[in-house]
Length: 169
Length: 169
Image (cartoon, rainbow over all chains, first blue to last red; front, side, top):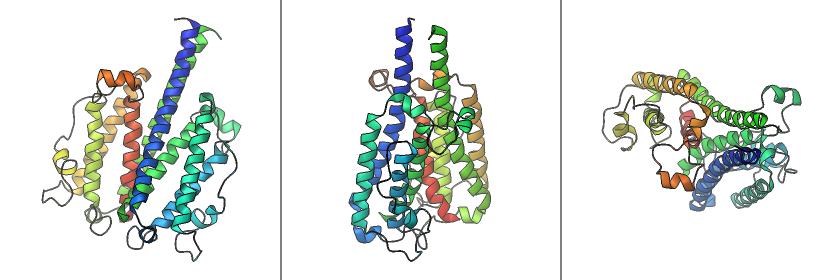
């Protein structure tokens, strides 16, 4: 096999992994967006099960976590940093005033469109770089803790909460 | 870069990616097993939310789906094919008699130990082969639909249902 062929293999191998991970993330977004279209704003404000997190809290939480991927993956500043205080560092029903379901729907779409657009501009090799929350030293020992691993992890996190949001249907 | 170095890069790239995917699957298993340890058999038999699937149904469903990965990934025969009729092709509360929570806990451990052991014996390149439910023709067009993609997808599926099982806590 020539050097050219092997370089092509490296490239297409990396691109294939990235495609697998991004496709699975997009699949989760499609499923969640399809559910959100079916739910009224009133329904989103309700609890997913008696005494459990409301739909609006979970949606805000997912928006905050996805928005947090922008700096974590080195893709830019947070767009909605104010979500953290409401949906990450505080539990639901802590007496804070939430954005309306309508506002959160818009934030959610905007965050995902921004991420999709930034992902499409990334070079394949960038995905295998360290993310911004791991030290150089730890990354040298654990090179699988790269940017692509963050997206795998966040996709699972989203699936977990989607399993709860579906109880609003 | 020499041919040797590039071959090494291909290999380590694949191995790194496989490690990322398997680590995320193991993380989900660890989380679910930790929850199962905390739940009594009586609690597992209850509904995860009013009118929703019981814990036992979700556990049986996850066991059936994971067991199904054995033939799908070319790793051997199903160990518990009888689970499908109860937990895949029938909804919960269809009047069928389920195994006890104790039995299902054992099946679940056995299936995951079997999968872990088979995964550890796989060559990295095997993960990028087609799985047994896609045609040669479709796989040629969509090479990301390989065995590793199945594991990414099943890990998300498990996260989705774990988000529901946690409501038993």
